[in-house]
Structure formats: structure tokens, C-alpha cells
Length: 213
Image (cartoon, rainbow, N blue to C red; front, side, top):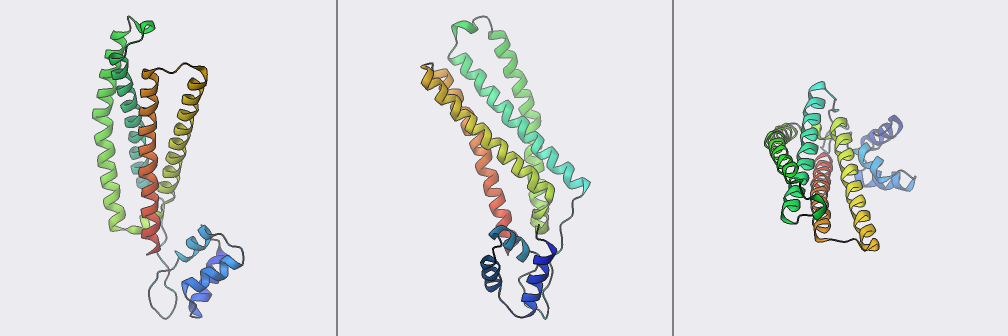
């Protein structure tokens, strides 16, 4: 968040007739980071008026926290169970001699993951649609602290999973213990985590562009 000093400076500069580009250039020359400059400018609407018009500040409500926690919680459950479901299908398609006798466990795991997905994924889709409808009606909800924190935590988790996945792949390559079954599982993890990372990176980009308007 922009500090009071920065906000006051931007307000005074806008009152004096300076353009947003001039203000941004001046602040950049003074050593302010681009993120803080953008955040500071977002405090004021880009409309013509006698004085700078402040944007409404976002507020964190218990309702918003509930919606985002349910959405991201069901996302994590769906992603994990989808990966586990595909893993078990890979185990059935490419059985390991050491796993002989575990077919019953694999089948039970498939039933469990399927059940979890049938419950969690529709809830995730519904909550995503509901939240999207809300931020479309009130764009300032995009600046919600809960929204940003949980999104960036999700991005961090997805990025760490991809990094760990690549490390595990390289470890097995160097150990000479690379099997088709293992490679397929590595690909599954990379695709799921990469999809989550890509989607929420785009999500945050859309938020930033919307708030800059």
C-alpha cells in the first residue's frame, strides 16, 4: 500500500495540474519503485475534475474471507485429488512388480479421488463464478487484501511444486532410475501446478489492468 507521504505528494501534484506520466517520472527519478508508484496513483481516479478524485478504498469483510478461503480450499483439494486420480490410472496402466497385490488399494484410491472431485470441483467453479461476478460489479474488490494474499500464496505454492518436480526429475535422471511411470507422474504434476500458476498469474494481471483504468 502507498504510504501517506506518497499519497499526499500525488494529490498535490494532480491539483497542480501535473499529468500521471509526469508524476510517475518524477517519483521514479526520486527512487520510488514502479509498484509503489502504481499503487499510489491508483488511489485517485483518472477523471477530469477540479480536484483529484479519490477512489473508494477496498475493505476486508468476513464474507470476502469466507468466499476466498472456500474457493482456494476447494482448488487445492481438486488439484491434489486430480493428480492422485491420474497417478492411480498410471499405476494400473503401468504396474510395478513391487506393487503387486496393491490393486485393491489403487481402486479404492480412485473411488476416493473421484468422490472428492465430484464435490470439491463444482464448488470451486461456483465460487469462482460468484467472486468474478462480484468483482465485475465492483472493480475495487480486486484490491482486496484477502484476494491478493491468497492468490500470491497459491502462486508461491504452485511455483515451489514445479521447482520440486523438476528437481526430482533431474535427481532420477542422474541416478539412472528413470522409468516411464515416473516420467508420466512428473508430467502430471508439472501440468497441474503449471496450469494453476499460469491461470492465477493471468488473474493478477487482469486485476492490475482493471485497477489502472
